[in-house]
Image (cartoon, rainbow, N blue to C red):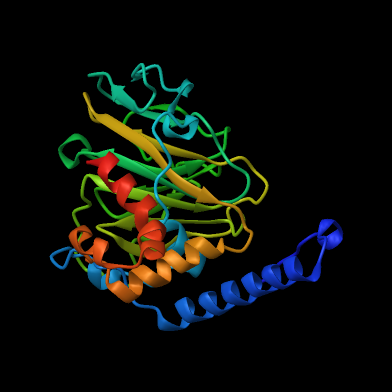
Length: 298
């Protein structure tokens, strides 16, 4: 980790000492969080728990970050780059597929990214998937429609997708492998809510299901290329919704975010809000953003 600051505008040594102390505290917390590796509370009944892996510290901090507010442009499907059999709702957050047969149809997000670590939430009911239900990312060059029923996202060299009905990963027109890894013998039923994790800096794509990070699904994605969240489906009447949760640059995590994560781990992930008032006021303020955001979501 390399932390750089411009000291030319700092007027006295006291300010320098504050910045250096922040550096030291941030590095110390990074080491502590990396080494301790306690897992976030998973849904114990989820079959995905046994395939969960410890997320990188950068992703761990991001998962503990309050979601961005509604109306973010990244929380919309593109009204332009989609199959003619798909229609985006007025808010842009949901896409609907018409009741047509013998067609595979795709849509990508309205806003892509070339850098940073980003998380999207996709809501897609299992009863509205059928075969060839793919969720992943693509460049602006991927195919938007094909005759018949096929894996459209992952069906070319410009897209990477997870087929939710068979758990297969698709890229360049081929089923690459089963996901998650770890020797799963049976096809796992993927719930309605899936988080897409794109690290454009590292060139990797992964997924979270039931609060379980399932590890890297694809690597060696083209760095510097603009990548978009994308889906393709064949089910008539399917409704697929997207929401951008949060993102971060490749810079070191903020000290406040590291402190909040360390505190939440120390208290326990299931620490009730009713007991928060017993904590010191500074600790309450540190946790306040997370609590407020949770209230807005309900």
